[in-house]
Image 1 (cartoon, rainbow, N blue to C red):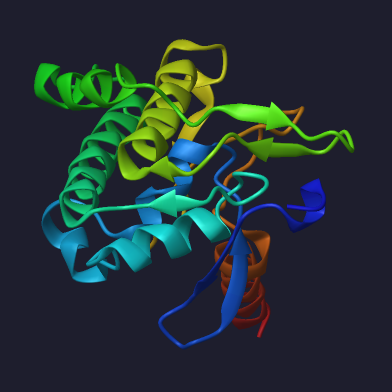
Image 2: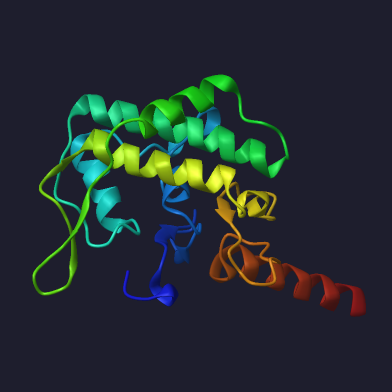
Length: 200
């Protein structure tokens, strides 16, 4: 992404309105692609092209050249579901389950994508990566997040009907919404209506 202002994913609400969601970490960017249990209805990772498209939209800069197999897409869904449960547990101050940690640790144990510098001084990725390297990069980011100083700032959006998970990287640490454009704005509109009703 070009700047912090443009960082994050462009998501669509149930009404079709587009809004930007910055979860604050690479690993958390994988969560909106679906999830375990009831979140499986949002699944978008069906084939290698889907995972490559996600990588293109993620905060990996520049986009890596990837060759992804069907098996690696299944591994991505498995890692994503484990990350989803582990991050959600952290929002409740609960420890992740050993089985979810095993999935994250197993993915992190592989070699990640290798960054390199071109002769013109710009960053790129060395060679063509595969899905396993992509997942290792994501899993290592998850290990850093879940064991680092920002772990207590992993949160779920305060809107009752939103389950997006993010890490609050703001200086004051008072972020409540997945996006001020979306849930934050909906809250403001509801609060204004309630105030007008009470005053009327």
